[in-house]
Length: 185
Image (cartoon, helix red, strand yellow):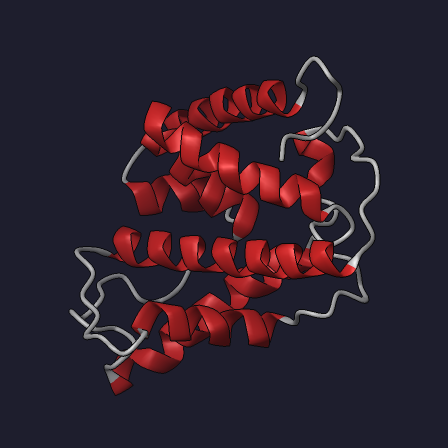
């Protein structure tokens, strides 16, 4: 992770911290985009810039902790990727949905926007069941953080982060495999 260990109340508005935080966000966006196709139309800089706009969105920002800030950033990046997938899906002709495992899904959101949209919906449901597990998925799946980085941000042990990831992965894969064999809409 970064050199920034403590965040000011408004880290994006503090010139002393902005460049460090922007660089870290750009690294997270780059990690998220590394799982995309090489010809994906969304670039890491565009992702981090859009996330920045969503994080600031005209109101004074205040985060309780470093973990709160980066969780907010992960959620913003998730929503941007979901919006991008919705736009991509709308541009395509309707077709049959194919069954995809969550572990295979990380290869490309754009090649299967239906999966990303289903995952977005399922993450909201998972958050109601186990908020910490949903946060682990957001931090790992959408920003590419390691178990150690995720655990550090969430103030839990890497073992706990791995256990939450396993629970979430199994739960999500079961939800993605309904009896009909199609990806949920």
